[in-house]
Length: 216
Ligand SMILES: *[C@@H]1O[C@H](CO)[C@@H](O)[C@H](O)[C@H]1NC(C)=O
Ligand SMILES: *[C@@H]1O[C@H](CO)[C@@H](O)[C@H](O)[C@H]1NC(C)=O
Ligand SMILES: *[C@@H]1O[C@H](CO)[C@@H](O)[C@H](O)[C@H]1NC(C)=O
Ligand SMILES: *[C@@H]1O[C@H](CO)[C@@H](O)[C@H](O)[C@H]1NC(C)=O
Ligand SMILES: *[C@@H]1O[C@H](CO)[C@@H](O)[C@H](O)[C@H]1NC(C)=O
Ligand SMILES: *[C@@H]1O[C@H](CO)[C@@H](O)[C@H](O)[C@H]1NC(C)=O
Image 1 (cartoon, rainbow, N blue to C red):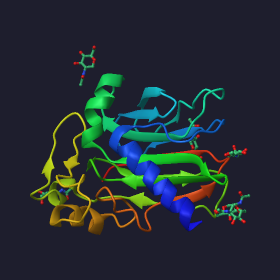
Image 2 (spheres, protein in one colour):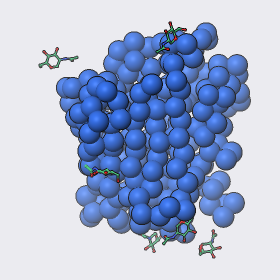
Image 3 (cartoon, rainbow, N blue to C red):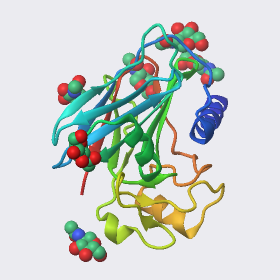
């Protein structure tokens, strides 16, 4: 199990760095995006099977984020969001560096999925990852009450499209005062590239996942 966690951590780091395809397995996973904010958001999705999606989620609504073609192998997926109503894949790409991410590796080893919340780029929405159909699987959560108040130097508010707090030292491999601010606000979430101890969660393969976006 220790090995499996280490392999998953490495895979996630590689996917964060360069979106490499890691391992593969046939299967379909439905990622459900729920918008708890009082305004519309765009839910963005990308995976190692080269599927991308930009999906409108009305205030208070939920969407079934495009699941990969069952014929295509799915190894990893990332989900994030930005405020707005216009679906646009290129806006999703632009907003990604200004957003926190929900990240998944599916059946990464031994019929186990691994998932995490990453503030390595930035934070813009509260995220809770809610595995469906198994109450024993952990539900990590990150929510920062007042982003304006939270976002102090060397971190900074990005403005549109993501309207996030940029994590200036997120790509570092050791903690800094800037990344510690993220770690303290969100102990469940990865705050810099190798900050993975206790922040990678596991659930047996075969479940769908709800990603809840919230606003303060
Ligand atoms: C794989 O899963 C089985 C059943 O849960 C467990 O007994 C075994 O130790 C696991 N192997 C590894 C390498 O994690
Ligand atoms: C998403 O999941 C939630 C919680 O299980 C459910 O209430 C909602 O109907 C789902 N939405 C979609 C579009 O599947
Ligand atoms: C959304 O799309 C409409 C119609 O194309 C455009 O007028 C508007 O400026 C867009 N809004 C944003 C925030 O991009
Ligand atoms: C996970 O992958 C293994 C091979 O690596 C495969 O035998 C197994 O059926 C897969 N599990 C699920 C639930 O898809
Ligand atoms: C958030 O923090 C800012 C700066 O400290 C403050 O001006 C604002 O009133 C706060 N907003 C809320 C909703 O508490
Ligand atoms: C639910 O998840 C727990 C924790 O990962 C696991 O031990 C258990 O086998 C799972 N149950 C089912 C029915 O998948």
